[in-house]
Amino acid sequence: MKIRKDFLPLSRPSIGEKEINAVVSCLKSGWITTGPLCKAFEEKFCGLTGASYAISVSSGTAGMHLILLGLGIKRGDEMITPSMTFASTLNMITLCGAKPVFVDIHYDTLNINADLIEGKITNRTKGIVPVHFAGAPVDMDKILKIAKKNNLFVIEDAAHGLGTFYKGVHAGGFGQYAIFSFHPLKNITTGEGGMITHNDNHLESQLRLLRFHGIERDAWKRYGKGGTPEYDIKKAGFKYNLTDIQAALGLAQLSRLEELNNRRRCLADLYMKGLKGVNGLELPGVPVYPHTHAWHLFVIKVLSMDRERFMKKLSEYQIGYGIHFPAGHRLSYIQERYKVKKGELKETERAGSRLVSLPLFPDMEEEDVSYVCEAIREILANG
Ligand SMILES: Cc1ncc(COP(=O)(O)O)c(C=O)c1O
Image (cartoon, rainbow, N blue to C red; front, side):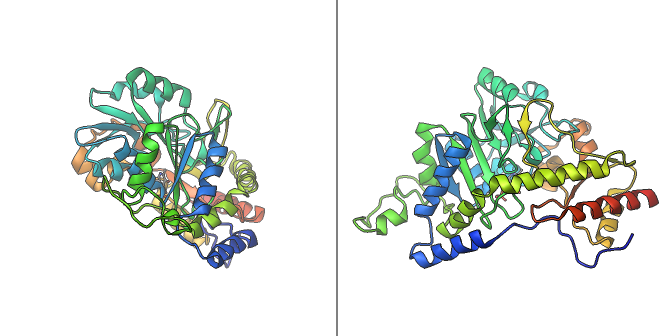
């Protein structure tokens, strides 16, 4: 086949006139940091997820940090999580002084295997952090049941879960705690950014204090007409707020969520058809329960070829790729610090060495998918 001249990236944000106009209008408004647009963005998230509260933050990672601290997670505590997750979760648990305890995944969907969770609960366990991997929801009914029975918190990692529904409920809408990410790879972006959703009346003000220096009111209320500039700090906090410039972009993106996700779904479907029956690879598995997949990523598993060599070949064909994720328990500091026994996470290991994420983003053309499928057939056929 003829190799294309231009490089096809793994992902590219879909930014149109709507987003550009929204950001320009914010820039001209006289207020560009956390303010009315962040508030509007938060309200949209409550509407989307059905959660009582939404708090905009500077990243999904910051959101995870705030929730863990807000819930009082500390030295000696254990948090159950898959190893097949982004390192940020493991870092935040570790930086709170707690220990991530790994549960294996389903090889096909890469989601946590909820049936294995109870076997990992000890008297130190405080919560479960499942990931809606690639936009496929985890089995929330099972997880919520286990959490209730054992008095555990659930923090949904919904970084991939914008537009993910489990049995009709949007990710982040299960009455627990959740984080979303707006990193440029995600289904909508604010450049960098994130959102917490939750239903916890007691924690709401704590999380907002922790988000912004421990100060009680947002700056726009202090400096706006009729505001008072004095403040007090009763507890130290971080600087994890989102800006109105970012929220302007986020609101414009969110208004296009259905369009963007429909396009992702259509492209994922083309991949499924285009790669069906190709020897030497496995297609992403999808959950058996009723759900809507957000198709944040399209992750195949390479069986018949060394993955390094396969990825090198993709580069030669001008195709971008990713690895989501290197198994967390294999990262150097996690290995040294938490010492996971060999063979304890069999499916994570089996999937982890074979995963490759293919290009998937709304502005991709159908011909791009056909090109990738043809290239993969050729690469695998030639070994
Ligand atoms: C599964 C998962 N969790 C958490 C995060 C962290 O989000 P952020 O980059 O916004 O901090 C990411 C981001 O890549 C992710 O993929």
